[in-house]
Length: 78
Image 1: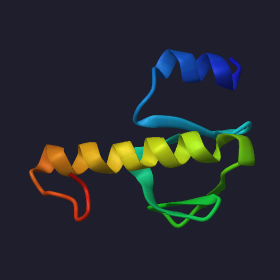
Image 2 (image 1 turned 90 degrees about the horizontal axis):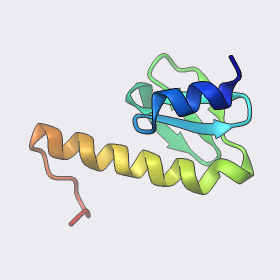
Image 3 (image 1 turned 180 degrees about the vertical axis):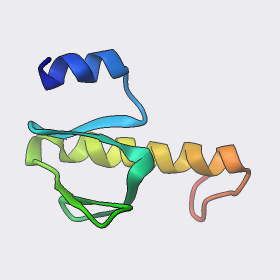
Image 4 (image 1 turned 60 degrees about the vertical axis):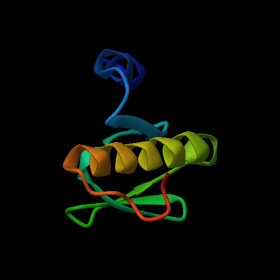
């Protein structure tokens, strides 16, 4: 199975394509630093230039929805 088929089967958040070689579950991302995703197990996943903006948007949306799901407001988000 090619990665694009897996990406289509998973159907979006919390999964995001951040690189031609990586599809990431945002629930396991601890931080986004520059063009890298730092995973909760300290693994570092690169973000390619072409996937940077969509990855950043998806990560931000995931953080917002996670915060709302727990009832905690995020600072600076309206």
